[in-house]
Image 1 (cartoon, helix red, strand yellow):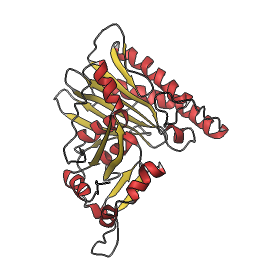
Image 2 (spheres, helix red, strand yellow):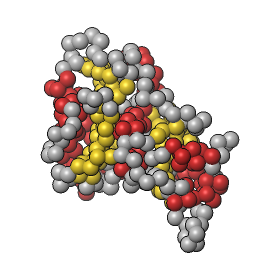
Image 3 (tube, one colour):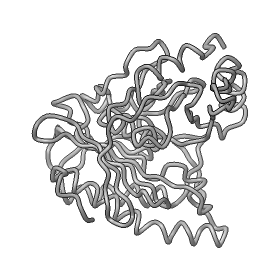
Image 4 (spheres, helix red, strand yellow):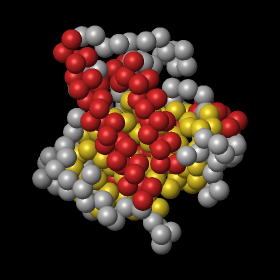
Length: 311
């Protein structure tokens, strides 16, 4: 991996692990897509979610590679109960992993993402987050806590260049591209379609008579990374909520880029995910969080003002 000299060592090594795993899994996923043999498995932990052999392979491989760098840590993967890895009985670092997000699309060769976040239990906050995009030219979104105590975010492309992420020009709701995980028809798409005030606000015409507000589909942590880069302006998740492995890695990256994540009352969601013990981690993995994320506080609050949350 090139041009990573500005990253702290742990962030650099974690990014290299993610890049390695994407190189390894990509041909497996493309073979699944062309053959039609997607390797679906019974999902005993999350019965309503698609699970493939590729999810489980990445789950095991993440643990193996991160153990080489860290020795001891709490491994909290979407695909298993939290476990302590290594010789320490109570290690500081908790590694939160979603091995293969949107796996039902990944095995079709369409979209696929992988998330990892390293959380310091002593600091009660993340210190590294990497979201990998398996098929896109923008390969990695990275956030890390640097020696000066500040958090910084970056995007890395397949040609080896990187971009520091920070504040973008603010936009009004009527000119924003918002996204939502609207793939599930009754669970998410129908509730979104009933948000008439939000739709009318997005459709409001500018002085030139053009309507520029849009709603698009996006997925898990990468949707917050897209806000961090300025590719989109906001994410709304009000129907069901994201699990911690879908929200937290992208949350930290967006935070490090200067964006905001609010709960539906308008309160900022803390980076302290209360991962102090194995039982705390297990409880955190069972919770879901509804939220609005945006590049600016003003836009996040404007989105909330136009949401009808009575349903």
